[in-house]
Image (tube, rainbow, N blue to C red; front, side, top):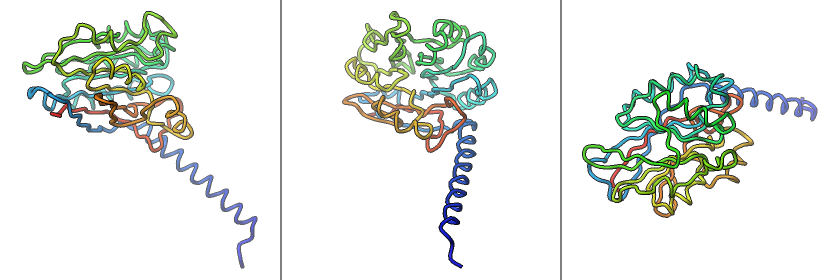
Length: 279
């Protein structure tokens, strides 16, 4: 006999429930797994031969907090160290909670190993969680915090300027932390490639004006899940991947952890290995 209308409605409802359950399970598994390594090559004009293949391993938006604890971060640190990077870059939103609550769970950061060290810039969530205390704690763990400032790395006789800015919205919490790419590059030597760590992609306009070659950002989580994926582009000019703004390359990580419920759909987490190449 033909299927009745009420039976079609019931079948449709069951199908929706089944798809929702499957998406929930897949989203959970995607969020809880250790992030995969994403390889990205960035061509830099006039890159010195000694810097060909220079690697920056970027992790971002881990959000150590209610559901992300030390074992989750330890797995990330182990995977980063296995890549033997020249530099490790942590581009903000490391935590969701106080130092008192989470210090035991961020402790694995002290094990990060890179030829030229590990560097951190604040994200907006650090400011929700007492950024001043977290800046001190990250430094205690042996990671260099870049607060609108830069370092000059010497690699096989060549120089690279690595700069970092505070979060784009930091001035709402502390005027002294106002994000400033121009200040971050002030008095830097000329003729070296210039890389900026900036939590939010919308720092890119000022980074172009300041003369950077590459900006590494996070913040967006690549959209992470519905319906957030529709709102992110309303706030940020770039959501994920390698983009170009005039003379500046911008790479936006989808994040190495997750925020909120353990759920990721169509936006997998990542540990990004950025290789500088001749432009």
